[in-house]
Image (cartoon, rainbow, N blue to C red; front, side):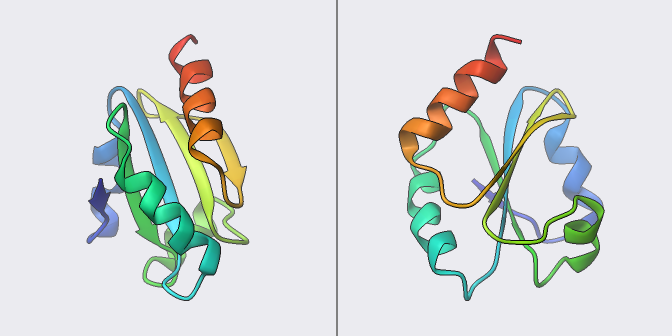
Length: 100
């Protein structure tokens, strides 16, 4: 799992394979619950983006609430999920995307 530190680096993390981007905020309860789940993921890349620190990215991707999960495959956004997701739901989404 990688925490985004520079807006310019966003696209670099998405170049190949499947990447889950977690838009979150420090004050969000469901985001904190999701964080512990995302720390355990070892089957795809995870990029965390603090929506309060990177409002331009949040606006660009239409992030209106947190947590919002964006799933990319080889740099293309495939799916957007809003709200908390269980480990099983995340794994199922990963499986669907990997079969595309």
